[in-house]
Length: 181
Image 1 (cartoon, rainbow, N blue to C red):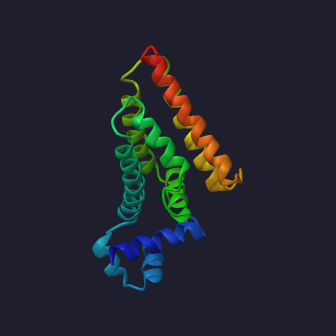
Image 2: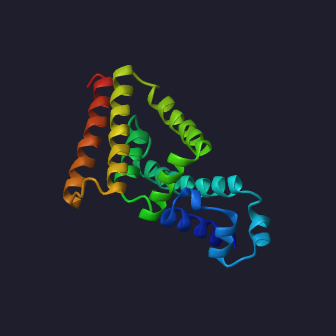
Image 3: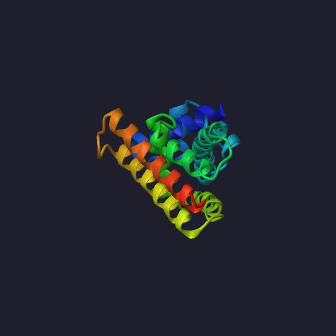
């Protein structure tokens, strides 16, 4: 039931906008009573927070799986982050939902900011030049994510692959430079 309620909230948010997500609208869409909804989510903030948690957790699971496949190395975190943003980290609906929440719900932005601070702290464990290059790679990957989400740059897969390769090479160069190679 909880998953169906979150799915209904996501659908409403994408189809009608963030402010259309009300407890009544979600209950109607999920075909449950308002009492059934409030048993799981007593308020709109509780519902929105749970929706964000699910979407952010999906991204983090994808990121962690990529990170694990990278093995441990000086670029494994930034490389996994680049790939998580450039590769399809979920359905477009989930990505759009995450973006809508980040733009419209300050508590979600604050939690995302905290998550990003953790990534930056990890990157800052090396020389400043490497940390700066890693930040450039992360920001480029996020820019691509948003541009793809909004359909601003309809790129063929080959171009996306070339962009991925270029960003991974940039992070590798920064790591080699920091290691004195």
